[in-house]
Image (tube, rainbow, N blue to C red; front, side):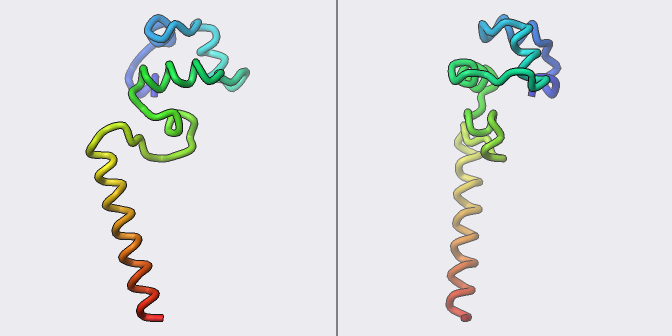
Length: 87
């Protein structure tokens, strides 16, 4: 996300209070962020912690994203109902 937004590590470091070398270690996989760092990064990038950690492919922090996710769930439920009715 940092690179997608054309940000330097130092930019993210200054904004989050996380040391630039520490950010570098996170990005290269040398170390893992603690929970406070995850929260700071999620807040900075305006994403959920689950999205940041790769636990979900959707960032459900805004109304439009939530509505889209609910629409998809509704479609899935209708499809399951249709399949159950048709045996």
